[in-house]
Image 1 (cartoon, rainbow, N blue to C red):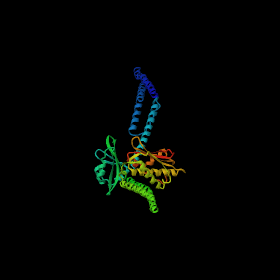
Image 2: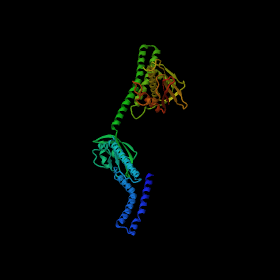
Image 3: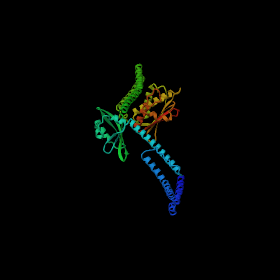
Image 4: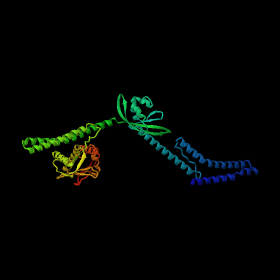
Length: 442
């Protein structure tokens, strides 16, 4: 390095100078020189020794000043070491280092201030709890939340209810929904805990997030959603039932003693009655939020079950205008709840009919049933409508998700609930007609 070469050169010539001047005082005394000669010889030797000492100590002094500056956060110091050979490089290195350290300390301070502001302005109340159950309110949200707190220990939070105090003892990585009581009114909060180390001490940091408004809104949305589901399914069932009953009434009024027409009226009334019974059980099954429609599985012939669905579909104002292509083996038997599965098929046919009718001049829909290798059934409803984009084929089964302007997004969600309750699966694909295909496996 340049500093090392310059230092060694400076040391060599200063040491040589001392060695050269060392005998001069002795020579001056022995030669009997005058007092002035002796003094000059001694001063020259002292100056040479002092120069050598300064040369040796300059680096130590500069490094000591550098360390003291760092120790006391004084980054304004500079280390100009004179024009001695090699020390310019050392001074520049120390100056550059102190400037860099000052910049890094400033950046670290800015980062600390930023993180402090983030913590202080966070909308979530943050607390720390040490091993002695001392609590520190870390930010503004915590100070606002516990403005009437008068102590610093967990026990002092008893004014907010015993359940909240118990929740403050939550272990690290724990989470709990608990009530927080203020002025006699309970609000639900979500408490989460984590462990951090600070200066060798273990602390628990606890976040407290009020979720009362969010949960309240979710509950209202769930209630509204339930009402929409019920309304959708009831109206979809009432429309064909009403049409069948009106048809039966008209036939009976015109039939008089015609046994054929009376038979048709009786058949229409029987189908309407069965549909009404299924609708009644559907409404009963949704009386509670906490359970899916109750299944009443039984083994039944698809050849007898499908014509009933087609009869109801013919009376539906959306499906009835489009012929349904039905494919199924005559000996197929299904192990399922016939009423709920019929409701699913009618929903799927109604969606298919709406998509096909709005897409082209010759709408087409189909219903196909076939056995699976595992002994179950493959049920497919397809159309020649616009189809479903591949990235939306999972979204369509979400509650209230719809791509139609007048849709409500409950039919396919209900279909998935019923199929899953049967232990099956349901998915969307492209149909053989170029539109959409909904395939259920039960």
